[in-house]
Image (cartoon, rainbow, N blue to C red; front, side, top):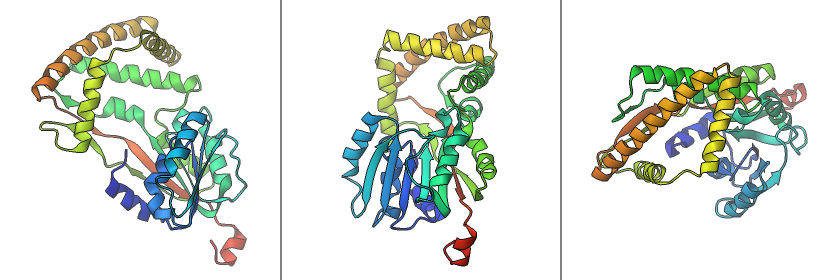
Length: 304
C-alpha cells in the first residue's frame, strides 16, 4: 500500500523518534506497527486496537517477528471508547478506519484525547470516490464514453447512499483536515500516496507479478452464489438510498454484467498470450497528520 522510500520520507515528515508510545486504532494485523517499527520501536511501545478478535490473535502472533527491542500488545474494543487514559500516547494513528464509521469525528476525538499535548495524530484514509470516478483506466478494455459517465453517476449515487445509511464515507480523506481543525489540532498537513498502479509485459517487478496472479485468480475463481447475491442486494440498497431509481439500477446492472463477461474473456486471452496490460493511475490514498496543542504548563516546562 505504501512504498518503502515513501515510508522513509514520511518518518521524517512525521518527526518519528525511537522509544515512542504508539496507539494504532483499527490496527487489523498490525500493518502500521511493523511498517513504522524501525523508526520508533527501539525502547518503544505499540498498542494495537481493533474490534476483531481473530485479526488481533493473528496480529499478536505475527508481532513476534517484528517487535524486537520494544513492546507490542493488542486489545479488542470500540473505536468510540478507547481504553487508554488521557494524554497517554506520543503518536495515535489509524488506517482505513474512519471511512467505515458512521461517526468518524467521534473516533477521531478519542484519538485526540489519548494523545499527549504536543503529540502526533496520523490518519491514513482514501478518497475512493475520486479514485473510482475520476482516474482514467488505460487498458485493452473497449469502454465507451457513455459507459464511463454512467459508471461515474452510479458510483456517486452509491457513495451518497452508503454514507446516508451509516456505513461510512468513501471520500473521507479530503474531509479529515477540517475535522482535525474543528477538534483544535494544529500543524495540520497532508500527503497523497505516490504509488501509481500499472501492469504491463514482461511483468518484471514483484508488484506486477502479484497483480498478474490476482488477475488470474479473479478470472478463474467462481463467485459464491450467496456472497454474490448479498453483494448485489447491498449495492442496490445503497444506490436506492442515494437517490437512484430502481429502473436505472437494473439498466446499470445489465450493462455491468455484460461488460464483466467481455472483460473476463478478453483478459483471459491476453493473459495466456502474455500481452495483458493496464494502467489506472494513482491510488488517491492520503496520509494526514496534525499535532495536539501543548498545554500552557508543558510549554512553560519546555516539554511542548
